[in-house]
Length: 439
Image (cartoon, rainbow, N blue to C red; front, side, top):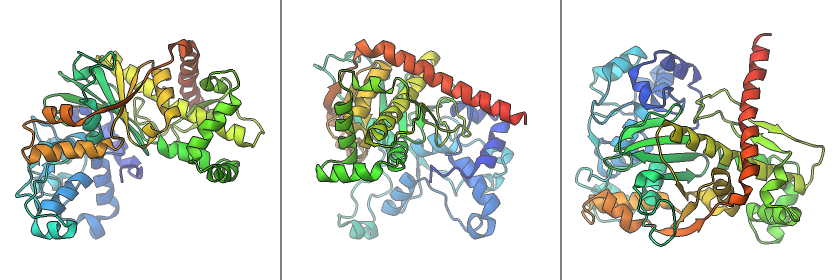
């Protein structure tokens, strides 16, 4: 599981090597990537797993193997999570340096020595056995895969935006960032030349859009964090009861409740005295600090539904402020971003979407098909089957704009101040750690 952070010791040792492959993951490897996980398995499950394993797969490659019987890996998975490069392949010196030289000895058979570009046809298509399990005809084309977030990015980032009065109209796709927002969030930006962004994964060549370099920012817990904060509050049973009585989801009810208590204020201004630092599961981007913790400033003794709604709002704002932090880091390194494209479960929440528009100051484009990961997968399949000659053509035809949410620019000063506090929070956390480390 990507969210499993057990391999802390292993990733610290890997980062201490300062090997050249680390420059392609923002300078610091994440514990969520595969090399530290493999090293953890070797060191902790040597006999029961490491020595018995025939292959190690990322889930997308496992699925294409089950569908076709072919062990080929996707360029997306091995480049983004395993340190493979599209021009140089595997770097023997890296695996030997970190203690996984056995992968080199078998010529990388266990982790992939046949790599395909996303959208390429795998083997002879669906095997008879897989076809029977799925209720489909044998031989249907199966495409080399993308990681789920990258498929979501592919499903939204290439949509035709003519007529929507967006700043990215008549500009290259490099002016866009795709945000895939679910349990965690990923921020996908592409460029024509490699851009090395401190604390942001990549640049990865052709890992999402063929011919373009990908940088991937991310937040390890977003939907998971919102759920944790809301369900852990003492007023959650009251929320659950009232939401059920009104036949609404708990989040729709919370949004309505915020509208009730805001009075004459813009809803976002309710958190003037309540601030959250959202790294309850460490920081993936742009600080790459697994040890960071969550912070809340401004709590009172109140225990009611109003307070639950406010901490819910402050948490959403903190996530959006984290997105602003990532985007500013990407832009400082050379990206030119003017429009956000959101998809995933959190994009269904209008408060989440509006806060991202207001706090980043950029318009948000929502996909017509909310499940954009499925659109991305369909794009790959349509290329593998020959229905489209290129992924770019399929992206433009199959990705559709649903709705555009504009930022409230009159709220800019308030959110600039919130962002100033946001950055102070992590500065203070590090100061507190330094004080306690001197104990």
